[in-house]
Image 1: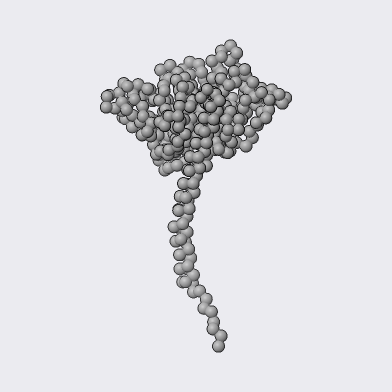
Image 2: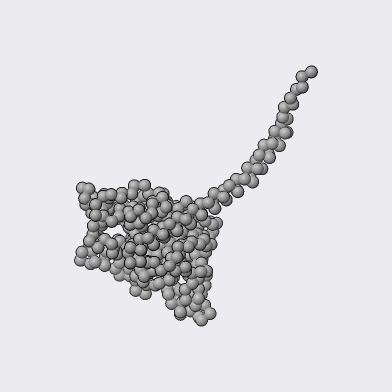
Length: 351
């Protein structure tokens, strides 16, 4: 007599399906967490690589990191309108766009490295970089830009200017010139902070970091930092500070707090879950004796003496860095424009 094979009953099939679903439910979060951890580690490696590129550049530049206004004194790359009669305007060359384009042009870093694997904003790898005879540089329209030091059209932030033949063709701040290609914040090398834009090998001085959100100081000058409320945020156009709505909050941590990598001048990278990391300390001399030593918020231009925030977190605001706003404490952002007159301001890209 032949033995008949018994088929699965419906109940047995449902049990198998339930077990598979249970296993998937257990494994998927673990896989997702592993991918997130891997992306964060890769980001740490990338920001360290960018800083290493700065160090290599500085080794042949008197220990100074790249400053386009100094390197392009003869206007072989770009020409700033009005600078022939007012040389101070050449500081407009010193934006995120041009600073890091120099590293790419010299082969010290690739555009793949400047785009973070944890990126959630309007950024992507920039794939149109022109190493030889960039069309955006002086003489580029007729292939005569062989003396250019970088490609002016490398797009670091989505609001960067567009260049043609060394001149601005689309002004910085014009709505969405395209996706940005540089995911990180950095020291703005202007005014007193220019002295920090060099090799110091300090283990407590930050140079680069994950981009940040806008914060306000709550509870007076000895208070605590809180994300800017939604009712204080303007349009999401890159020009208005973003606090609780910032896309940078979701890169490393929960959507309710900032977390990210910070690279220091000795090339080590640490991950922090707050904008004022404990290792970054500033002595605010005008505060009460027991409150002078405070963790420094790296996304706020604080007054060196009394901790007053000198960023004005209002719609369409720029960040003043001159006069009474000229400070040395840690301050990290990426920015698409510089106005080196009056109060000397930078225009950060907010997202």
